[in-house]
Image 1 (tube, helix red, strand yellow):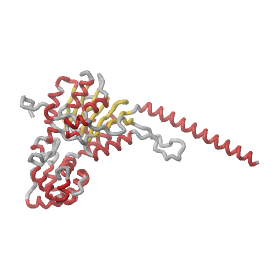
Image 2 (cartoon, helix red, strand yellow):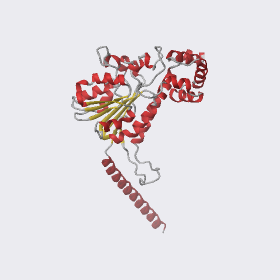
Image 3 (tube, helix red, strand yellow):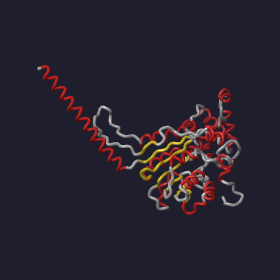
Image 4 (cartoon, helix red, strand yellow):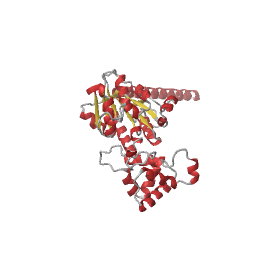
Length: 361
């Protein structure tokens, strides 16, 4: 997409979710290096660079070339301090290597769908306007559009996708309706799919549903075609290895499945000794890799929800990488303390048994 005067401004297209909370958590500083794995239209990145007084450095990634062009415009005031790369956020290590960065002082990913994508009928993310069934975040890649999945996947595979990623209790009925409909005619548009899913829902369920019956199916298909859970897991597998000690990673998610992945991974990072409680001295030598900055997720304020209702399901979780040398020292001192406690208890037990023996004598 050409960056001409007809291009909308990033500010008018998308409102960054939990902007202040995420940037506050990262605590950007002058001279620091920061990774925005989902730069989008540059909202979070701009705030990070502003917080450094324009004296920091940023590497921004995105799969969406249209979003990257808008980010390039928005972040232009920071010149060559900002590097923008067209890639998945799970491949951030290659991007960092490409610009000569070994590690970063902070990393952020916002794994929701942008308003630019949702509001564009031709992208096929939403059924609010009829458009082609696409849903690819990167239309320049060799990834297959969701129409291919809808029209070719086996019944059981469709059911599994809708059940797993959409958590829809009607997954079986919806999958059967899709398979039966595509025999007569390929399903080609968002409107066709939405109407089909709505008809598959029992009337009683439709009557009491708060959202359109197709909402969960669209979410599930989008997550499947873009491998969103796999992306997140691969990012979390690698990010601590590229964070400097004291550096923080912030993740904004919008779905319970994603939030569970982030929650469990950060909890594992912060886990210390995992020996059974009956063992008096640690033998596992397992030490925490990170500190939980947010033991509970940070959610949007009422004011933010009034300004941006789409932020309703957003959750922010943040962890801080611990210094491995400090961890080793803590481990050694902890083991020594545990050994001394054990010896003290043993001495007290022996003394008690000796006293009891003398009294019996």
